[in-house]
Image (cartoon, rainbow, N blue to C red; front, top):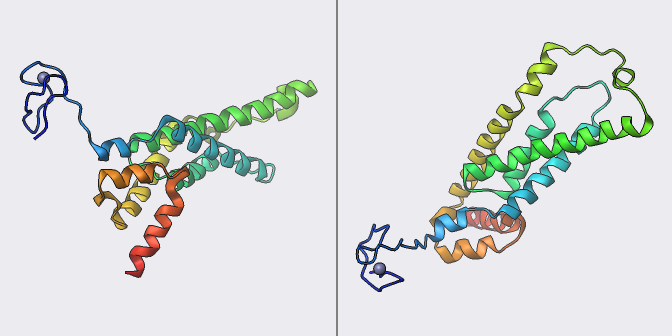
Length: 196
Ligand SMILES: [Zn+2]
């Protein structure tokens, strides 16, 4: 039985506060602690995704409008690679991908026009926005959410399949220490579970 860290009073199983001294009970949930991705890793995943998204955008042939697709695809990719266990983490990654992609692309395009002293009307040669242009842009936050949802479903599906959830707190902890995504680990684990 657990006891209070402050006064040593034995605690009931589901106690949130010590019945003796009233201090909050520290819960040592290995699971939820490991399920929480650190802010650094979330940012890492998001920025990687943003660079992939910008690469897709800049490699696409001129005149082809991809709208949210580059950010959507790279959000899915990095969520799959980093395997966040919580939907909130997947959502944060996806939002960072979208936000940073926009910032990088905006900086590149506006920066070039600024440096070369080209006006917007000159650059866009009187281009008239279509309804799709407006709708697709306004749809960005929604598609970011959808990417997070699908990415999280796929990632947690893979985790469930290889039985990763049924581990101990120590296993989660060592997994967490493994570096970006633990991709190699999960791959090894995946192959192993298929061999057996
Ligand atoms: Zn106490």
